[in-house]
Length: 227
Image 1 (cartoon, rainbow, N blue to C red):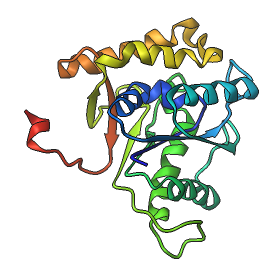
Image 2 (image 1 turned 120 degrees about the horizontal axis):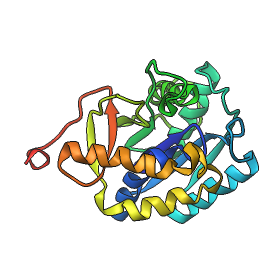
Image 3 (image 1 turned 30 degrees about the vertical axis):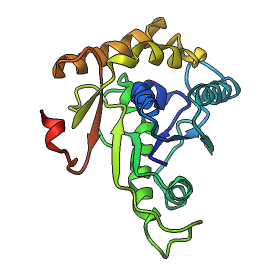
Image 4 (image 1 turned 45 degrees about the horizontal axis):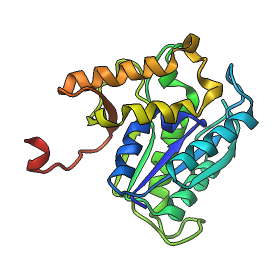
């Protein structure tokens, strides 16, 4: 697998980096999803509805999806949970792993700083390490991920880099709309709100729209990327 994306909730990957996923697939890279919970503690949608939506979104994209049994708002960084995610990494053997960003102090109104997002990012950070250790109580052969990147950036967090997704915004909106139970977030303006964020990232880089990511380690670029 080229890319493996983790999400704490059923819509995280699509809302956080869905246009990038569309870019990867259009360029014939392979992508897999792993979602830790079915939601259920938020204001909109039941766990049954949200599970159906994330399965429908994955089928729309044509990507495999693993749905785990974590409870919404009770995702914590523990030894056992690290092993669960490390097993997923060994299963898919991705070159690049994505997760929600893992550490920021922010207000309760900042959706990017949801405790489940932060905990999932921390869990993935540790799971990537565990997956490569040969003596861990895990399934499959050890696997070393080449790069770990983070999306769902809390407000005012500066990205390490921005991916131009200008050509995929219509498809991204259709993808996000599959999560019908969540459309009423922000008074029914969640998709326009997320689109404004992408417009801002694009503006900073001279494109129409962009999605931002953070890397805890340097990202190797070549001259073609800089020119």
